[in-house]
Length: 290
Ligand code: HEC
Ligand code: HEC
Image (cartoon, rainbow, N blue to C red; front, top):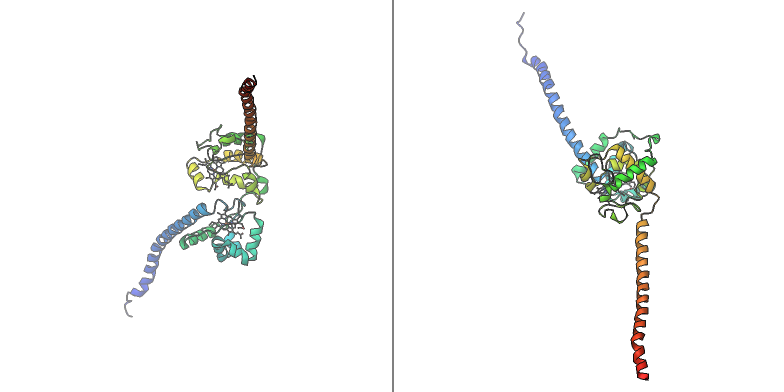
């Protein structure tokens, strides 16, 4: 019998196995990290470019809830809806129907290829998010909440985390009069506009997660609490039947009053002046007669 020779090749197999086992967890960890970084990039793009109008699982806002969008639609559809929504709507039945369901339309958004890929990967990763809000969870609107929300809006009641009051940048017709900020948008009919697409909590979600750069900055480290958001939501619901033009209405009234006042003033002045004129002329004329 020949002495068994040590077979290097046979020994290599388990060795390679052990080696692979040592390497693989390391390899997946760094791939995971890369993945996370990539998804983070996608999330940033979403927050900056999409979240003002779309939620992921929070219900419809200005545009539809995008949870599960990558399963409902093709990648190409989503890409084109971002880059050229109007061209897509002209060609694609589904896109046209979505367009008809929402009162406002999405404008084209230019993204670099890398940002687009990261965004699509993020939307894919978020595809199993369920729409969180059930109809029975519609935010409450009570008198108490309305009053509280009004005080927060006007700044008579301070925000818990010390964020600036809304009135420093916003306006609501009939409240805060002429003192409202000119920086932001008029919020009188915000509740109506946000809930028009059918999600009664659309404004609430927006207040809790404002996607407008200036507001994000103002509240980034001084977040609005859920209670405060609920109160503000109730307040906006209570004013949403006012017309944003109410304020302009007053302005116009003042203008008309001003013009009328001016005419009246001129009239009175004219009257007095004429009297004074005759008062001067009378003795002259009478003097001449003598
Ligand atoms: C200013 C608001 C606004 C912004 C910002 C916005 N969208 Fe939209 N989006 C809409 C509206 C409104 C619709 C509905 C239909 C339409 O455009 O006519 C829509 C529709 C869509 C649809 C079609 C959904 C479906 O069910 O077919 C996709 C996909 C989409 N948006 C993705 C995005 C992505 C991704 C971003 C960010 C890169 C984004 N949108 C930014 C308003 C917006
Ligand atoms: C530092 C200024 C600033 C403050 C403070 C601020 N906002 Fe805003 N807000 C903005 C800007 C800017 C926009 C974007 C408006 C636009 O795009 O025309 C905005 C947009 C909004 C919108 C969406 C408006 C729309 O019609 O699309 C809502 C709702 C809103 N803010 C609510 C609030 C509430 C509630 C508060 C107080 C808790 C608040 N904001 C405080 C600057 C501010």
